[in-house]
Image (cartoon, rainbow, N blue to C red; front, top):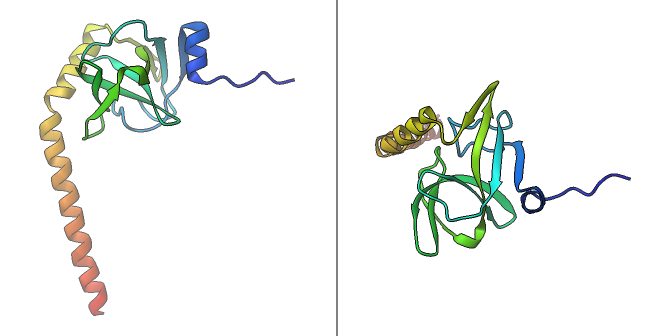
Length: 152
């Protein structure tokens, strides 16, 4: 008989730690889709800015960075995302403490990692500006191409 599959929440409650793969692109370039492995500890206290929170959004689990601590929750955003999210305290179930990228092991308290995080946040506004410009240019090119296709 096969053992019953546990949810991440159940694993965190039973063992206090979850180790598993990443899925998605919202934490690029730090975490690569289906390649890297994360170590998440059960949340035991309020998170701090720069922590990476594991929380539930509906039935999905999301791993994003805490930007700001509010009275009843957090302002959170993925490293590869351009919109902030308000997440209530009760939705957060864990915090990233370490991860494995390819064959390298990183702790979230490591000085090199913290420099990466601060640099990533520092250049958020210019990155967002260029991403928006790129999307407007693409949309304009598509419109021009559609005009020329119609006239043929």
